[in-house]
Length: 486
Image 1 (cartoon, rainbow, N blue to C red):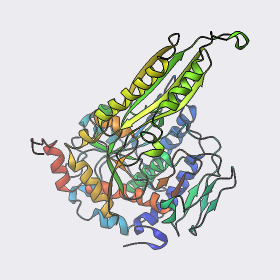
Image 2: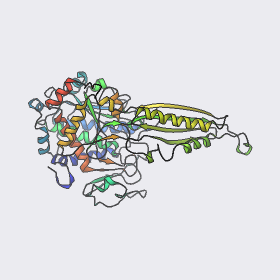
Image 3: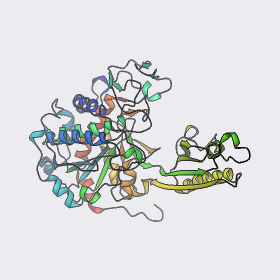
Image 4: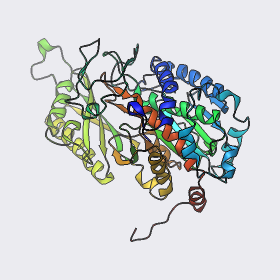
């Protein structure tokens, strides 16, 4: 049943007010990650937001709430007694009982010991009909690619389908160049003011999880397994999973709420590497430089210019095509550096891209024998597909939850990465679910409240799905071993 004003269900509509309040609070906290971090988290605002969210989780009735020194927030919502009597009707009852106070009255419920048992169980049992412990994950930080301080969110009620003129920076959101925006007429949209990013990536995920678990805590009649919640720091610089304690988290699997368009479900990401090229030249006073000066800065610029312009760049690729993306060039005639990210879904193709970058740099530097070149490659995260394929029921459960919210799942590969990339490789299978945010990492970032609410409602549905016998049984059977013929 579709609700008025574009909401997917009455459940989503009932969650929207609490969700919006939380989201607006969260985006006002500057949590921009800093590259080349010297500690975790890389910025103090992430701890500030972590303290705020941890307090809200406690108020909602979750147990074992903790914010550690590295900025990781964790908490537990113990399984409901309702799960003991079966999970067949939880999706329906969730939609019918939409409460206006889901986030307000959660403090009355929730056990004290759920987090401890989850951490020790290794994800074996969440208490509801033997259901496993399930994780929900989002990240606290925002991208360093656009200004992130002083975010002033604006809610545009009942979007009329036209151009949105933001008050600062001459920023415009034009549906002619944003196909997703054109489809949101009638929705309530949230933007920043034009001179900062919004922070929908991934504060929608944080708000959706917090709203959903508060609702579940306030409605113990709904079946759910034990849910473990984690909010991570520094995901945007590839470090969100670096200090994540999977054993202590104690979940069978998890879901990042960090996608985009409504209905998206992703179990594949880029494989990612970073390359730093350092060029040393010969610096001489420019007035006496004839035949002596070797400008490292000019050589660096020549390397960037020599890379393919009609392919293998972010602006010329799409779908499953990879790229080489130099995003920072700095230096002096004496010393210069290029920092590039290299991406592909295929590991072998990624190696070819790295080799092309290396060969191009060596050819340019080879024209000047007095110059020196160093190349350092860091492996950032793997494609998570091979780690999730053996446990197809993890993604199947998410598909069931999305459909229960009245949405047709859209299986896509992420042209980027999530915490789930590393977490899956570390042993915690972690697909990615939509949030309703768009135009990430830019001052044009926006989100649909209706789609955000659908993400929160999908989490509620997901809790019910994991109490169904078929999913608990599949989890107990373990990974699927595929033969030579798949």
